[in-house]
Image (tube, rainbow, N blue to C red; front, side, top):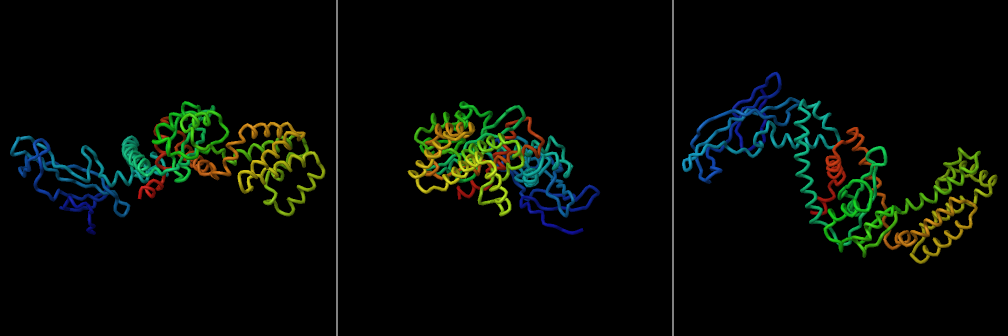
Length: 396
């Protein structure tokens, strides 16, 4: 039989054999003396011996089982009986530490049920192993994030639907590091305050917060970070204008199939698409006003400098109010209301692009498990899988 190093320095291999269920490796601890956990005296008096069967990392896709000869010692000083301590095997467990870590890594990006089936481990056992390690790693990452929190933090706040029936979770993200800092139930002001209070240690560190136009989030940020700059995500603002154009298009029933041509950026259209668009705008001159307003607003975000951007936004709002479309008049009123945080983008050009991408990843985590009944475990999964190595690199 092929002899393979075990890689566990505390043990010496006595015998190896290949059985029908996998490799059996008989080992015992190299140390012949133990320190009493009751009084601290060292002893080598063996009171009893027993054998523990524990599972270890596989070799050549074959399961490996360690048969560990565990010695029970009697202390010379206090006469107490105790078992030898093992570094690589937790007390009362049937798996080595490194095998548990391996199972945890397999569960990342997969489901506990799938890993349980492949490795023939009871689901409840693997679930206990995974969430035990996950809780420890979450605390380590949280500590690393607190230690490495930079001055001038930029936060992103957004919501994600977790269940049907308008059930949401609020997601908090470090926009610079691209790591999820926490999640909390629903998207109300009190929940956002709770989430921000738990995960942001110092109010003075927060320089900028990126939001959409959801009023409860703005109220929470203003309450906790009165000196921070609030920036409304530009993609949500542009979305308001494109939705206004889409509403205007619906007033012309023959244009059901022209939605793509009208909403897509002019510079992204092919030559034949541009010709088709020109024909549509020539045939419907009133609609060309809405299209012109949409393209004019897209040019607004290409402006250099705050003052020029302010002038162009005010000009656009006046033009939209004078347009014949109620949807653009409503969009103009909305933009006028949020004018200052919209213009803050030109002083601090951050967007919610990272958190929107992370929200897609969070949805994949939810779909992979066909949903979560325990939302605390769902949040733990999201925190571990969407924080990545950013905290480690920052701490280093």
